[in-house]
Length: 103
Image (cartoon, rainbow, N blue to C red; front, side, top):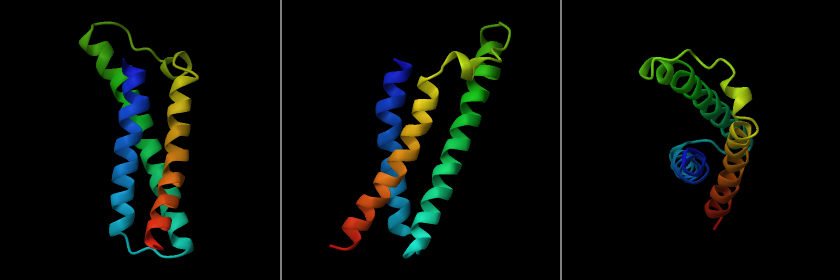
């Protein structure tokens, strides 16, 4: 259930929020690509930190078990595929935004 939610809900939320961000931004031309890369990197870093916080620190505290320091290795390749999805979706959203902006 966790991976189904992550691969369906998260991309929709990210794509929608990213599109809204681009609509409100004042970036033009090559700056849009730079802003896209910055936002994708920020989202991936925040996702990585949230995953680490929840699955390595909070869940073990709640269930009184020892921290799973190998979480990112144990969840491979799915968690890395999730971060790759964010990368691809960010650029797809940028292309959709540029197409609609030129209409």
